[in-house]
Length: 201
Image (spheres, rainbow, N blue to C red):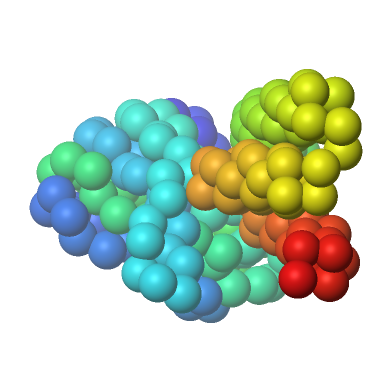
């Protein structure tokens, strides 16, 4: 346990039942959390109310560190996935430990690096999925164009396939800037399709 290794005496513990909100998305980061028992899930909610799981943390792990260090709001909510107990200290106490204890500072840095590495792996997976879908749609478009002699009706159908590929990749994306990139790609495909409307009409 991180905090038990570096804080003398009792460390404050808070208990949560399954489904309890530990902190809300867009709430200001004020505390440092470490799981003593149980599981905590990190979830994102979009404008439509749909939730996307960002990560699952278990006993001995910490979460919400980046927002606390950067003095920002939480980009996601933390919810108790099971009944759990958390070690909780204030942001002021956390920063005091960072300044006064080099070993604590090093351990926190290692934790943040592992979490960033995990996020990078997720990002690469989503990007690979998007590329695969785009290539599949492009291949289908080329085959259709070759068979139909570049018939504008068939070309528009190919654009539709590319649009559907983007939509699927967009639905699978969890990172906000990745979703933005897919949204831009969808917009480009819509513009291409619109450019052929005069030909079809």
